[in-house]
Image (cartoon, rainbow, N blue to C red; front, side, top):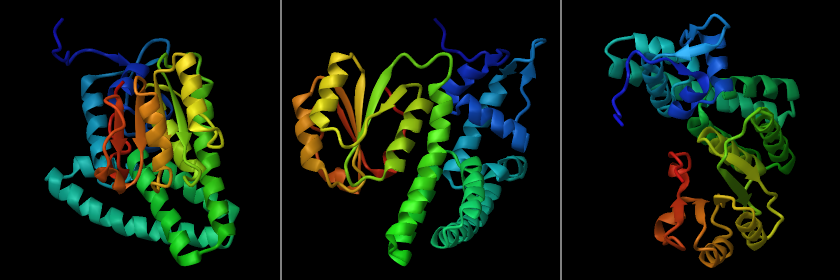
Length: 290
């Protein structure tokens, strides 16, 4: 079978989602809000996409990973020379991110629900998952360093978690779910919203992600996953507080595919088995392949 790309082919939205990692809900939102691309329409109204559309989406994701918000992508791509335009846009984006962080921090400190919800609308619309992860962590760190209020931090994390859960609900209620299943589990010190974000990432990678509460012992999670023929277990340990816990369980269940999403300290550790992949913070949302 030839792997050559058919430039004249038309792809349905779910195939585009598989090829680009942009889920159908996000893609439709980008079309509606930003006129990012205009798909071909069938007589029945279904969207079809060309290879040019797919290439454009890949370039969009690359620019977003550089920190350029989705609202600026169309202008950046249309400007010339592209690299100079992207550099200029990235510099502007850095200033925008700083201003956005300050606005979020103020809304959180004052417990301003409506203001925070509007800001989260903007954040979740403008950023793909990887820059979104970084921005959310920056806000989290800013609140811990400058506010030092348990109430503010809980308000912030709860608001973000609810927002991610809305997206997950729309994915869980699709008529057809991905056939490959992975279990997501987290260390006690890892915020719930980060585990939910990893769950969302796994869905966007084409897996049916099942999040298990962090209060369940990891060995029990592995035992259940193995008995139910679940393909992999992902353990999220943001601050390396549970190294002994996951390394023992990963070694015990060495035949199962496992991922550890952790801190930069993982660079000093060895995988617990040949089926284990350690991902430090910078690599969390690299492509996930079973």
